[in-house]
Length: 393
Image (cartoon, rainbow, N blue to C red; front, side, top):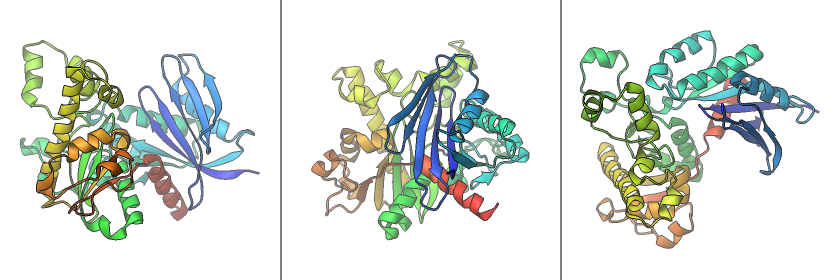
């Protein structure tokens, strides 16, 4: 007996992550998996709803993206799973000024997304490649684009404008913000936990290999630490975060570095990896007592605390602080360091609750409620696909 399913795709330069959900209001996850080490030694792994590995295959290095997408859809609809794939949804990093919500994909959408490649050169091409590959193999398959930038389209002008000539701003050089799908999910969960809290003054810290923070007021994003690209703001796993633009000029003019060399350094060789010289993995750094490792951690925390103050100022105060992302959800020492000496905010956390990774870690006396909420970008994409397809948009 076949069942209708939704497929969620998160495609990158070296991996394809996917999840399959039942096409009904419960949105139960049927499968999840990934293709890792693309272009080198691709490995496909598929896990069932009990998180058991049910399929693992290795492929030659020249096995292309389109072949993987075609194979995945075909596998889901084979006798092994016997699914009918109703629609495919994609995490798309950049939606520009045009898209403030998910959209059913057509050729006009694809052409607009291609214009945004210069704004997100390390992510956007792979998002588009996934869409076009699936369309080529399954031209009648409905596909939905869900944008990491969409949640932040409610920012006021001053939060997104650089102090550059106006014609450059009008050409799209402005702050966009990212991780929007994560923030949208966190607000959904907070509303489920306590509906009255979602209209408070909220700062969400999405801390992982990519990290950012968002200021939310009355349920809407009013500012974010990421800007024109996903390089801005906090120190991240391998990304630099805030950087004086004069550094780029210096590297170009006096170090004779090319644009590509600078791009590779800023995206892949900086952040925790660059400062520590050891690893981009926070768990490894927390277990390492050397001075470079500890300095990388201190810088990571300092930038979070710095941005917490700035976002609180933008909100005119703070009622709720939420930690999410791989580090935010699991690294209690980082949460403790971020919240240390924050009496000026009226913020206190319970050390025991924090160590146990409880959902709420603030003390009863704290004027700011502090939560740890696991994010789920896949689910929020599946939810958008479900409602768009149900409406027949």
